[in-house]
View 1 (cartoon, rainbow, N blue to C red):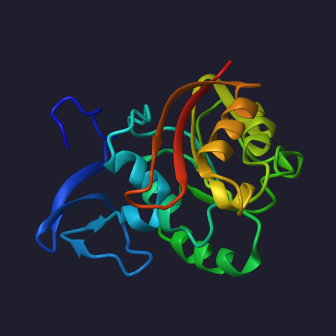
View 2 (cartoon, rainbow, N blue to C red; view 1 turned 180 degrees about the horizontal axis):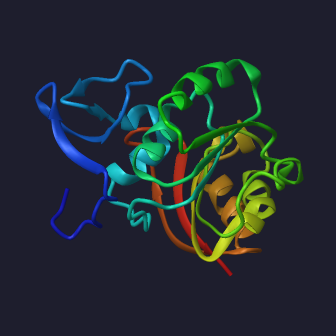
Length: 214
């Protein structure tokens, strides 16, 4: 990582695990990740946000933020987020991974699981705080830009959207670059795109996006 890379959030460090430097947070392990003296390795190969941080994207994360996380699955990434953030709302649609998510929440009093559909924010609007600092989105569905636009209502005007676009979820047969361009065009309805970067080093046919509300 270059010396001019953005600083990591408070509560996230780079430490040596198994002979190589990796991101880590301090907390209870969730998915069998290596641990060392209370620190748990953050596997960028299993986390789009971890990949964005590993690649030096300027996420704007400083630590202590209020976070709405869409697509929490079984808690792999959102558990790391809750280790260094403030109140963290974890939205997941599928009941099966939510069982694992509940286990990740148990030792994390700031992590709140919601069995809801990210495409229908009205179903959890009564629970999630307004003016969240960060909206993290990793939802494998068609219409990923639309999901981000619909959930804009929860984000503070100076907040950040950290979006991982999965090309194959939009159109399995289309060229990923064309898919990314179309998603970004739709996203600009409600957001100013600050940075994009391919996540192919860790996640094939994925694009990392940092944006802020218009």
